[in-house]
Length: 495
Image 1: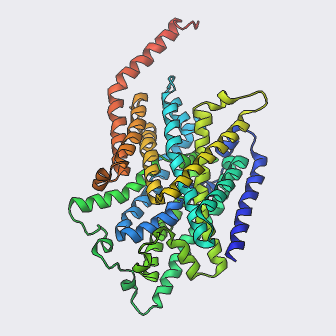
Image 2: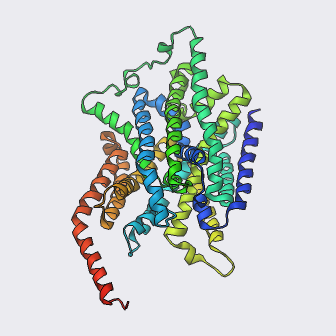
Image 3: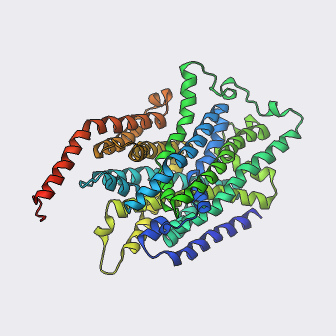
C-alpha cells in the first residue's frame, strides 16, 4: 500500500510540472511565476521550501542525539520564520518590482548602482557554491527514506529523486515548483501534526508514565542546556536559536516574497506561514523525542538517528496513512531541492550572464536556462552521491549551507531595506564576510565547539556591512555628485 501511495504522489508531481509548462513563456514566468502567486500558494510554498530533509529527518535525529537542548533550535527557527515575513517580505516585494529585478543579486546590484558587476558576480558564486551542498542534502535525504521504507539502495533512491526533481523544474519553473510546494506543504504539516499526536496516545497505553518514557537516561540530553551552566549554557541556547538568523538570507525563500501577486497579499500570507511554522517545527522535534520513548534509547545505538520519522510512521500508522506521511517527508526534500535548483539556475543564467555566453542561433534564452538547470541538477546529484559514500549527515551539510547563505545575504538584505546609510561597498563586505567566516569557522572543530558558525558568520557580516558603509558613505556620495556634475556639463558626451 505504501508503494502505491508513493507512486501516485510522484505521478501527481510530474503531472503538475507538465500542466505548468503551458503557462511558462518568459524568464519572468520561469523564475518568478510571472509575479502572480496568491497568498496561500506563496505561504505554503515558502514553508515547504524552507523546511527540507533536515526538518523531517535531521531535526528528529538531532533531538535523539542531543536531547532537549534542541528546543532552542525550535524556538530560533519559529521566531526566524515569522520575523523574516514581517521584516522583509513587503519591502522586498515592492523594491524588486520597482527595480524590475528577477533575482536577489540583481536587486542588490540595481539598488546600489553597482556598474562594476561585483555584487552580482560575488552573489552568484556564493549561491552556486552553497546551494550545491544544500541540494545534495535533499537528494541524500531522499535516498535514506527510500532505503528505509522500500529497501532501495540509497544510490538508486538519490538517482530517482534527482530525475523527478529536474524534470518538473525544467518543465514549469517556479510556477510548477510553487504549486507542487502547496501539495507538499499540506503533506508536511500533516506529518508533523498527526505523527506526534498518534505517538503520544500510543505512549499513554504503556505501563510507564509519559514523563518517564520521554526522559533520557543521561543528564546532558535531559537538560535544555546540555547539562552545562554559565557561558556553556549560553552557548547552547545561542547556537540553537541561531538557526533563525538564516531565514533572512535564503534566496530560495526570498524569491517567494518577490513572486506574490501584490504587496497587499503578503499581509495574509505572513499569517498563514506563521500558523504553519508553530506546530510544524515543534512537531518535528517531538517526533524525535517520541521515537526514543517508543523504541527506547538502546534501539538507536549504532543506528542512523535520522531515520526516526519514517520508522515511527511505519510502525504506528495504517499503511495508506504512513504512505501519505512518508510521501510528505520526500516532499520536504523535493520542495527544497527544486527551489534551490531554480535559484542556482537564475544565479548562473541571469547573474553570471551565462545566457549571453551560450546563446546560439537556434536557441532562445528560456531554452538555455533549462539546459543550465539540467547541468546544475546533475552536478548536485554527483555531490549527493559523494556525501552518501563519505557518510556525511544531512544535519551537518544543511547547517553549513544554511549558514553560508543566511549570513551572506541576510545582513545585506535587511540593511539594504531598512538602513538608508548602506552602501555598495558595505554590501560587498557583508557578502564576502558571511561566506568566508562560514567556511573558516565551519571547518574548525575547535571554533564550532565554542559557538556555531551560524551565529558568528551572521554577526560578523552584519557588523561588516555597517562599518564599511559608514567608512565609504562620504566617498560614494562624492562619486555620485561628481557623476551628476559631469552628466550636466556634458563630460560624458551627453548634451
